[in-house]
Image (cartoon, rainbow over all chains, first blue to last red; front, side, top):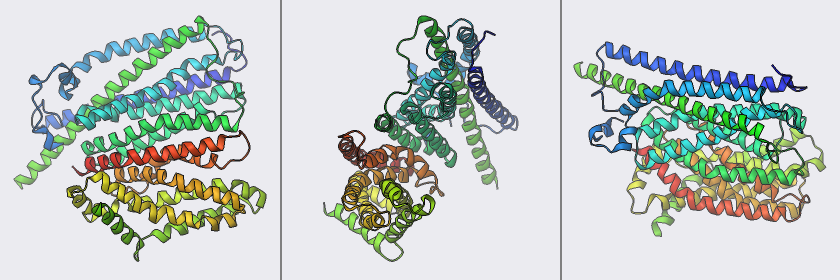
Length: 57
Length: 260
Length: 221
């Protein structure tokens, strides 16, 4: 790491907060997707389907 | 939801764009894009971070704090871009009552809110060493804060509606009202700001940036934009699945009831 | 035109009869304004400096409180459906309702403003100016409130979500309303603010009936 001068804590803080928030967003969205996918699979396994596969909600 | 499902044309007789926008087709084609997009985002982020930290000089005025701008500026751009996406999607929901437009608008809101929050946080951390304070009622910072409020209001509104198809169209109205208002808010806040303090504070946009700073800025711009696209796709897919689950459950409940 | 006036008359009657809350809004306005000195302190100099801001904030909050009645009762008793079937376009009906709402919520508190002005040690010339800016600015606040009320009318507990949507949109009105009262700083700025305030009101009067009608239609089907 190069020397980033006297304000290093602010720079690192900014990148850390960004990383944290973006990371949380990525995890949240992916978890949501995984949950929905699993729920849909479970429903289909039970034979509960929508009227047709192509017809949307 | 249920009532317009019957009048829905089958995907085969739709034009190219309508087919792209058909939820079922969207699930199919967007699946192929996720992995390449993820790789692209990672690569761009790696290049961008390399340039931001190793291969760019400190600003002669701001010193090394200029490195915060490489994430601040793209986040601020996304905070506006997400709203533009929501506004365009809202037109789609109102004019064509397209279900994918609702989904797109709903998925964009939390992503936009997050990047707006990032823009605010990094702006504050940039402001502390530069202005000597975390928060300055600077025109740009203030209108970003208002933007965050608008995002949070819209997200809160999404969560209060039970019927998501109706929610989509109603929220589309308020999203468009917000879109008309955002420039007015920006203007009024800037005006208010110049009224109350001399314009001596150091602005976020320096006069001209040397090439060595523009490179990391541009790379990060693209990295953030593609990250938005990727997250938006995944979020939309999740939302489509959620709606399918809901309609399947409702059908099941109806069947159970009719069987007695 | 007769139908238009009939809508205004109906809403005026509903708001002023017993159980209508035109008076409650004024009381709320006065109380919010009168409670500020307890937080700020009885310093008369300071109070008269802050008075325009206090009065504007109080007006903003009172109007937020009042907006829920704009469509909620009509939605609950089914009048809203009747209005959509009426010969008069929904946009015009909404415009009539906006006028009636302004007359029964904003106008009373503007009339009550001199009372607050005395309490807050505002001099006569400034009081006149405050009343003038309120007269120009409150229609815009009522308009934004109507959009928020229309968007949330189908939600059972829409009471708290509407202000959250409306407050950010009200910022320009607040800025120009209070700036029009500022003295000193930059000469001509307060006049410019006054013109901007008028522009916002005119624009919102033009757009609001359409946006509100659209939101109500989208919520109904």
